Image 1: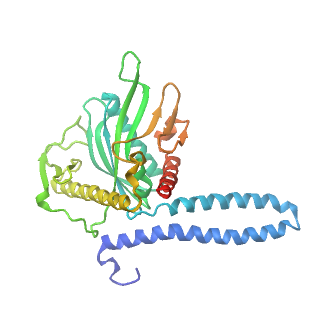
Image 2: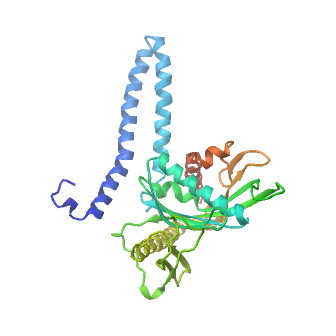
Length: 330
């Protein structure tokens, strides 16, 4: 970084800066824990002569345990792309208007979590439903290990509540699907043959407003060999929409390659319940009681509104531990 030509290639330089930040995020807390252990030993020696020091020992020990726990979580973020940003898509599934509304609530949940933890968020694509909510949306979440934390969110999210769109006040179950891929740096080579990709240009659709572009500049890419479809319509420029669509396609293909590697190494997908776009991973209840429970780990929080307000770190951490245990068993 001290080389005079370091910033001649800004994108590459930013990648190095992010890598340094990620490494410091592990090394610096580790140094603090080691120093804390030495301080704790000194306190214990003092406690042998003065019992009044024991209360301070308890406080320091509690702080130490919390620090070590956070280090253990960071150590689980060891996948090949875990330090990357994340491209996260939310799609309304079964449930009609409730599903559209639920998809928008989920989108807001991830944006809130990202902002609370110092991540930046960029809206790449959004399709509003004509009546309520969204049909789908894609965001890029950028920051330290964003993909490592969020990749466990991939799957089906189920909501049970009294429907605000049902005049009879009946209970409604609705579903939304979340897809997460790593945001791959342009310097990473992901081979995509242009002949394998069909590009369609279309006019953005939706209810109107800031998210809808009225010109025919929206881009949809279809990767023929895999069937992957991505689209971007949020920018007014067709060039920018095309750039983001290709970035999304590269991310999806990188995710597939990552899954293949993990499957070969640890037979990860012998149990499809561990993750997967088609699996139901979490249940959110507003009726008859209020709670959110992860179907994979059993972790739950009894405050629905806190969770959709962005307090999902407990779910992210518990999945990382659950995933590591599953890999060890395989």
